[in-house]
Length: 105
Image: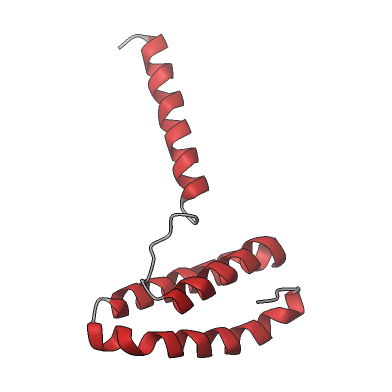
């Protein structure tokens, strides 16, 4: 492969990875439960825009873990039926702890 083609492949790969990184949050997997998805979106916005950089990784990991748990729960019809209330309770509990960072939801 010529140097020119190799550089083109490297640049295209880097551009693709950049696009994936930038749209990953926006295209995060939906739980299929409006209250849960609303909470996850608000939590993510709070973490990325209000929290100090040093604390973001911890909160993002918590967010990712919660999203995965809820997506898995939503696959079970009997669990999914109770998720709206659980997600609202989670939002109420967590939003109080994030108010000190200036988050309001």
